[in-house]
Image (cartoon, rainbow, N blue to C red; front, side, top):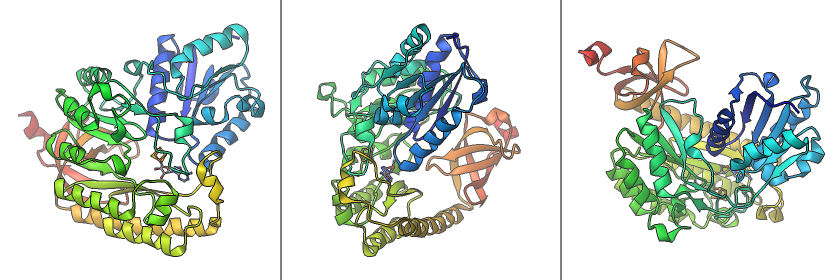
Amino acid sequence: MKDPKTYYIKTYGCQMNELDTEVMRGQLERRGMTKVEEEAQADLLIFNTCSIRDLAERKVMGKLGLLGRRKNTDQIIGVTGCMANAKKATLFRKIPYINFVLGTNDYHKLNDVLDDVLATGQKGLGIQNKFSEELDYAGAKRDDKVKAYISIIRGCDKYCTYCVVPYTRGPEVSRSPQDIIHECKILADKGYKEITLLGQNVNSYGKDKPEWNCLFHDLLYQLDNIDGIERIRFMTSHPVDITRNLMEAIRDLPSMCEFIHFPIQAGSSRILKKMHRIYTLEQYLEKVDLLKKIVPNAALGTDIIVGFPTETHEEFMETYNIMKQIEYSVAFLYTYSERKGTPATRFKDTIPDDVKQERLHMLMDLQEGIYKKQRQALVGSTAEVLIEKRSSKDPRFLKGRTRCWKNTLIEGSDSLIGTLQQVRVNDFTNQTLLCELLHQEASLIS
Ligand code: 5AD
Ligand code: SF4
């Protein structure tokens, strides 16, 4: 097999996969490889996959199936990510021209596996259940120059009955505070302004390492101290682990953005119990009330699954009414997808597809109205925006986000990229706030 010079990584799924792709890119570039923009031109093609829902898996399998017809058969093909953990060596049987399969806990072995495949022509396989903590995050190759993802904990111990993550990513393993702080300082020195702390459940941070004496909110206090890091976000949380200490950190630390992902999943306590979410609707609402008391201007995000096995129309309406009451500023809405090996399979997927779709569309319509109302209410107000890049769709505008994660478009020069600006909201479109700089650029320079 010829030594690959170029690579292309196609990434599916969540932000953790995006970061894992950046870590793999760092390793490949250190062995002298360069990224190409077209899959067909790459000597090495990697599919970093997701298996959270059936649709995500079908997309990848469809894509891998099509590769059998490709012209460039010298291409080395690897499958990484959650599907690699879920399907392991069976992938070689299903798609015989795959050269290696590497799970989410084995990326530190990428170059070794590649070397083995090149030397022997044999298939390479690396699948561990537990994260090994040897991953070189600091060597990640990032395209974004303003914002960066930072992994702080991997895996999940919550075992929601519908979810594959505890099986594909394994148990929770926190990364040491020293390592995280070191990486953030390097990023700050390079000019990064915003970090998003990643984990399947960041609020569990440090619980697996009591000897560190550093829980999630303790880590936040340390990160807030780093010069140059202007904004800290985190993704994603489990409501049970959202503590008063965390809420106070959001209130007290200047760099903490007032946006919190608070995924409810369902509005019925019976369904929440079947989901093994370990909170009732009342307990969830108590926490939301506490948050609103401590951080009155906090914006809330959520994830919701409709059509969970046995969900009645009335129970679905409980979800609908809670969404209406809370008015989330971001909502990711899904239909239940049965995943092999998860405990929910024993409940039988009882809700017909057309009912699931109808419920989903009801929530989507409701949320559209809420988004519109929220954007309308912001017209005339001022906000702080981190200017991220020029819009590729409409190059007249720069793109950025408010502290509460609202998309904005602003006219201005490239010199503003990477800076925090005060803007006035003048108007809005379906997904974006249209803003103008409060201090025009000329006055900023003088
Ligand atoms: N079916 C539908 N949605 C799911 N999620 C996780 N597992 C499933 C599933 N089997 C959703 C949850 C989770 C988000 C990342 O994906 O809402 O919070
Ligand atoms: Fe999945 Fe639940 Fe863990 Fe989130 S908390 S990753 S939904 S098991």
